Amino acid sequence: MYFLYFALAYNGSAGETAESVGTPFHMTVDRPFLFVIEDRQTGVWLFLGAIENPLLSQ
Image (tube, rainbow, N blue to C red; front, side, top):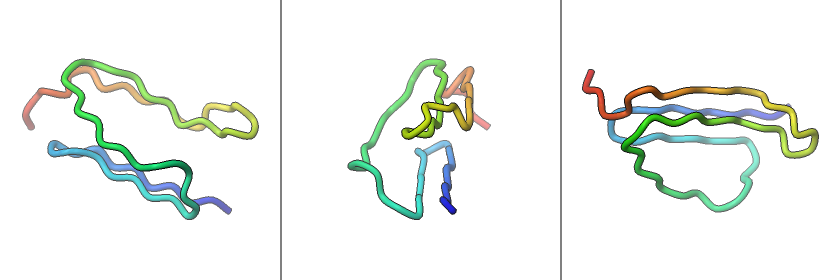
C-alpha cells in the first residue's frame, strides 16, 4: 500500500508520502496550470488537477 497526501493552500502546498521519492522543492505559481500525479512504474495517471486562477483570494 502506498499513501499520498497533497494539499494546496493560499500560502503554499504540502505533500507527504509513505516512501520518499526525490528531493522536495518549493514552487511559486502565478498563472493557471495543470498538474498530474503519475505512477512511475506504469506511467498511468492517477490524478489530474487544474488550477484556473491561483491568485484569486478566498
